[in-house]
Length: 112
Length: 114
Image (spheres, rainbow over the protein chains, first blue to last red):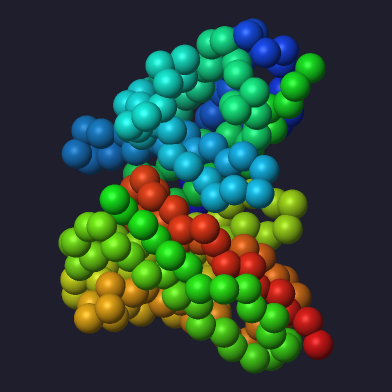
């Protein structure tokens, strides 16, 4: 199975600051169709997860452009510029290129 | 709009089975994979498997082989997951999520306790 390693596991930020989360996969996530199925999923406390970004850098509908995803092959980053209170919660990277889908351990974004 | 409405909280006894549901609306049920994901208390997310309701094909995470069985009823646009031989380790919230995890159900909390 592909192992997804997220760092840091916890991140304290002040409102208005930026935040960055790293996700590394144990093998390349580039699939045979040329696409890289790396998602970022967000879960606020007590809520269902919500997908924010798919295929590394494509924002889902309604996701503010404060969010951005970059990376390729095995190295990926989620950046949040100007963190807002509604952004606090847990962020997971998730690969869907190869079965079984696997998730990172999650990064908890907290208020400083 | 797309909605995935899951069944309610379950309290079940060890060694028993439970079947939870996920009713889909707002899209063509038979044309999209349905995934199931587990979240144990205080833990992260684990992918259980998917079903393609159009033909009933399934794919499981090997970890859940023999534990989870995925089915779908096209007539009611409902996906099901049966969990068998339950132990305390199976106490968790279980989510259904549409293809590529773009839409999620609200989750079903399953508690295994005597």
